Image 1 (tube, rainbow over the protein chains, first blue to last red):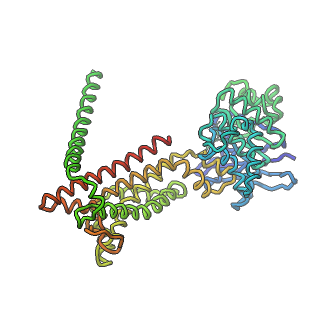
Image 2: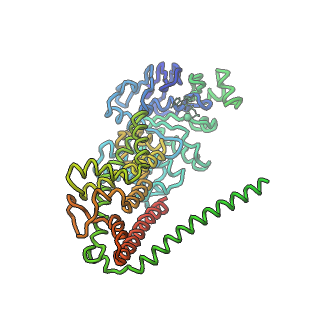
Image 3: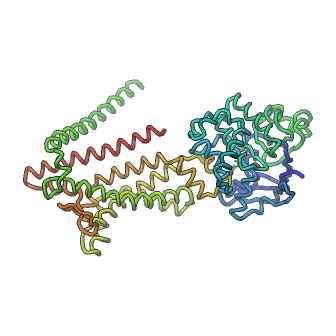
Length: 259
Length: 267
Ligand SMILES: Nc1ncnc2c1ncn2[C@@H]1O[C@H](COP(=O)(O)OP(=O)(O)OP(=O)(O)O)[C@@H](O)[C@H]1O
Ligand SMILES: [Mg+2]
């Protein structure tokens, strides 16, 4: 059972007369990394942002089809059915998201990581401290920040900030993490550290990652989905997509003939 | 040719800047000479009735303080509403209204409060003055809050939502914090603006020669008293007006500078 199963999914932005995603069928497999690739504007972010319904921050979007979420207890629910505030909170704590630009909150490093925990109702000080420490260790940041947890997160480097955002998302023990071009604003060394971290996280969570970087997709992902103009053109094991693509479009894209 | 035009423009800009600076220097030196000449620390110890300014300074701060207590929460709430919740029509109407209010002459605001508060309540009062000042302050606070919140990147809001926070929690915990320095600076500048206002108080709170904390009566005001004193025939009154102007200018300057200081240190 994939953790997320996207079925006949279409998505239309408000005020746009055609759907930006058309009839998408795609599984996000458990404890695997699924890369979404495709030229700019093909709908990668739109698809990713449907999986935690972050689109709903802006009203008027139209969803069709299903996004089935199977949690660890094998309960299946359709993410697109969610309407109530508390269900949204639950959804987003189970399906975390990391953005292109690092988004540290204007507060201390500790409070950043503790933020999601506090929302989920963790109040006990020692439990908070423990879980913040675990999350920071799990994001390979503990060694660098353990002696300045009370300092502002804005003082960290870009790469550190991005790892902090990952720690913040990991702290609430999500089942899925969605990454939207998480390294495109970072230098090569920070990028390497984040890639390592993402692969490391696979043992705890399932991952979907949007990337423009072919090497990155082939280095870290298990499955790859190639999208073009709102369609899912091809989905397969990553090595098959890169070594033996079935569709002409896919081949053209990965060999750099367009995009 | 380009170069020549460039030079002419540069020359003109420098010339007008110099004229502006010259007038500023003139005003400030006159103020300092005349003001310092009649300044002594006894002014802070006595009320106007005994030839001092104590009641006026305290009164002016109380009026501006109450105006802030009314104006800051209302202005911030409206600013948050139009930036974070308002969509389309309503937000635009409030924004436009607030812009119009910001450019309304302060004497008009004074006249308005006179008509709707002073006349019905039967006389000038500290409350009426504070309300007139708060009306001056609200649009400035709306405008700063609106602008400063609009500078907070969309991703920061989305990151909060993506962690499960509700919209209002994201605004309180994250967005306002991110815009805090800018909003605080704006509020301080708004305060500096109203503390030096005369027109809105002229026929709302008027002024009083005595120390008073009773907001239902005419209320001591430094600016209104400067206006009154400057119109008196006696030399002593006019000297006192100079000293009061000097103190007021220094106060406003300090508030303005601390506004700048906050911005510079926090960014
Ligand atoms: N808020 C919006 N309103 C209307 N149309 C939008 C909106 N956001 C994106 N679109 C459109 O939807 C399509 C898909 O955009 P999306 O951002 O998902 O592409 P992407 O694959 O992530 O591109 P990129 O690689 O540049 O990030 C594009 O045609 C885009 O113009
Ligand atoms: Mg995108």
